[in-house]
Image (cartoon, rainbow, N blue to C red):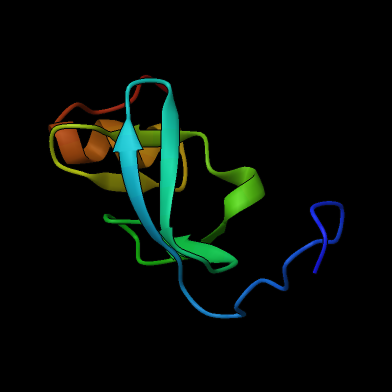
Length: 73
């Protein structure tokens, strides 16, 4: 395989290390599960996570819920 060919992604759940403003893929996959709702989050849609807890969230509402804050209506 040369450096311009894409490596096939595993169709399963990825294992991610959540960093400040970035992520590191430890085990390839196509999605992670929201720590609050359990819904799968495609890696290309992953926008919210907690570095200290090492958890992904499907939306800002899920992150606020995990922090114990009720989102404004």
